[in-house]
Length: 158
Image 1 (tube, rainbow, N blue to C red):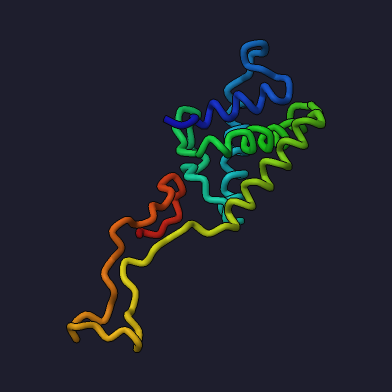
Image 2 (image 1 turned 120 degrees about the horizontal axis):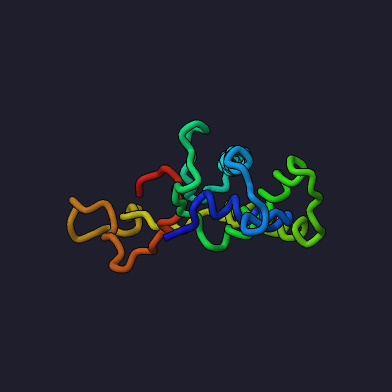
């Protein structure tokens, strides 16, 4: 099971020095951070960074909603959300948070730039490969196919 939206929000508050176990955060403050989290992930989706995060209407989004974000993206989400919400709460993020957010975002961009490996189910034989049977213009499907990462929701059925 992946992280919930609330866990990302809480860890972002920890990153800026407002840990929920030390400070009593109002539900309105948590909802403001949740809206910013949804907006940040929506912007990333527009840039091609598909993480499997469930985007929803701001009025129906809850902190208890589970996400299917891969573990490699958690630090980038937490630190970038901390950078976004820190001015709202009068905090200045430290240099480590800024560097971690930048490095994590660049990692996510580089992963989005690399297309997932796919293998077509069958390939045309071509003019030089005359099969014994005229009815088979395509090669047989490979026995061991390449598996595609199922955590990324690309919207394309394979």
